[in-house]
Length: 292
Ligand SMILES: N[C@@H](CCC[C@H](N)C(=O)O)C(=O)O
Image (cartoon, rainbow, N blue to C red; front, top):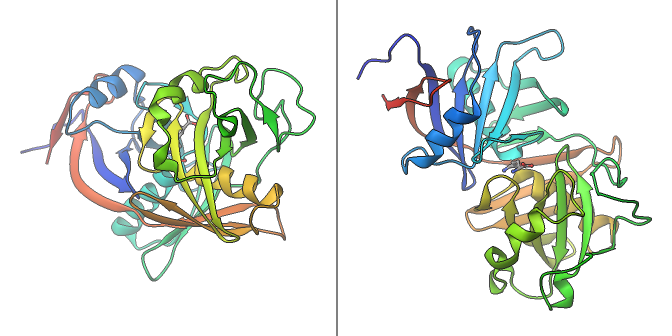
């Protein structure tokens, strides 16, 4: 199949189970539209959790500006698993190992290591209620009682809130995360009035002072197999509530992410894999696509 001139390269990638489409928009004037995202998500071969649309480098983004689109067409401020996919794509083309990108939430530094794993510096977490954001003041965002909880289980009535550029609510649960029906309450919690910009809803079970398992109902994407920024939010929430140290392994259905909340600069560094599944091309306005 031949790529037509108006289509942009599109890579189907896998960020530890997070379904990612990297669309290379460098050298173009147009944008990936929400309509294109919704059309791509409607087809089983291109259904995705996030699109990472890579635009031209600028002074403050030497390796490119990244727009992140959720599968419902909304924009996200951060996507850790998708950022690793962009790094893997660029590294395969040029051999470059260190990258500096920018998103609507700020700069993102990343590095591909010799073993193929990729680290992304997700920046410092934010815990102030206005910055997460929550709808109203919360004196202590470590422990927040959910107003009008949708579940009777006390573990599903209290959460820790954090922003990793995007909003997260982490519910620490005493049992295996798979023993909870997150699909039953995740959509309602995502849209709860306490979260004016909606929120990514995670269940976290602490399994040791240096490990936890995680399940996330993502804002704008629903239940996913992995969410890198949620892994960071869960790790910092576990550390600041005294449940773990600042370095943890976060276990997800498709593997593990290493999270290091650094003492020296307060940044959260996430390390994990990224895999290319296939290459294609897409027309960014309409979402018309082909596999190459
Ligand atoms: N899967 C991503 C997070 C994507 C963004 C999220 N759904 C949002 O809208 O905030 C990750 O790996 O971080």
